[in-house]
Length: 433
Image (tube, rainbow, N blue to C red; front, side, top):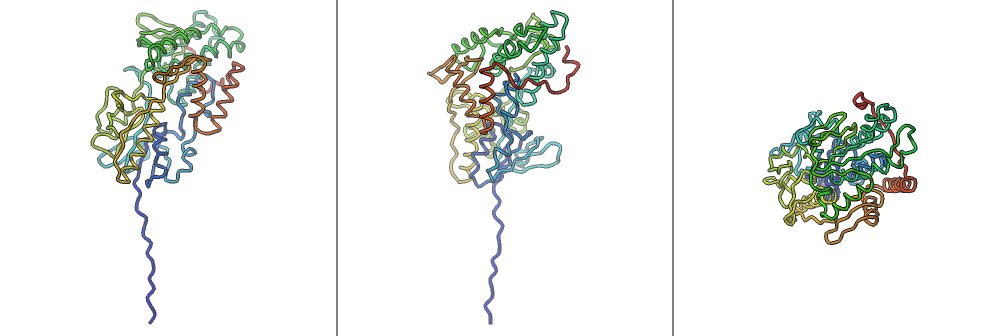
């Protein structure tokens, strides 16, 4: 008799825990990277296909950089991470009980074992949503293209204008909000208007352009120490920017802005005041602060659901008795912390509370003008400006982007010119005031 032959049976590999990350910004991208060697299947879901380096978005709006210089396709960034699937889509619902995510317009749903919510936010118009079309904010590539269009179009309209008062209104640019975005935007415009555009027009003097920065508080850059805020204000004024503190906007129209009892004639208003958090946070059933941010646990999970993490702008995180600021370095640290805590949970280890390491705050105001706060050590002027340039080059994703931005900055530095002065998109009737 022949011996029976034993045929090996192939057993399916055990299912890996599924981690869904909503948002491909600084926080979401770092969370995905932190899980690259973990025994999980990661799905990163975003409404766009690219990661945006938001700190340089204002330079796209002021025609200094091209959108392609500060974005990187998410699939390309994570191309070597074999356990990660990138998905283009928009979330319409989250059910933390059934652990499912509904996708808008497709009827599809994702199930998860762990969820990391990092959706970012938009500008807040303080109960006046109708102002958004008249005073666009700066959060996306599309926003930057629209701001650039309106900024350059204002000079084109002024060139064709016969009425002196109307011409002055076209050459008046109002920026609402004295935080880093507003300050950097206000500081960049005079350099372009007074120098880069000076010889391009025949009927107007671009050096007569007014830049007005409106801040509702008593100082610009309120997150910085008072002495640096005062220095930033002086630097802006030395560039020709009119800085108005304690100035609350009461109305916005196509041809004017109301500030208390005063009316400023302008056709160009940019919004950089306040933030509104993604409505997705309200779907979690977790406690929220006044701004709509989720009050997370020390490990960045939400109360009652240790499998759900909220990070970035959507999270209210307290470290050392202080609320962690909504800046890129903090978001990146939170993303890494959330990813590592998921890996620790899968390995049966205790989670580690998030500990924010403040690497300092830097804001640029104009050529050779910047402020930097590193706690006890502070810098201003030329050295802070060079430091700002170096930091932003280092944090850009991809060698191509770093090289391109470096070349564009060098070109602008030596020639005072801007290489991306394009007016794109349809010109609407409202653009003429």
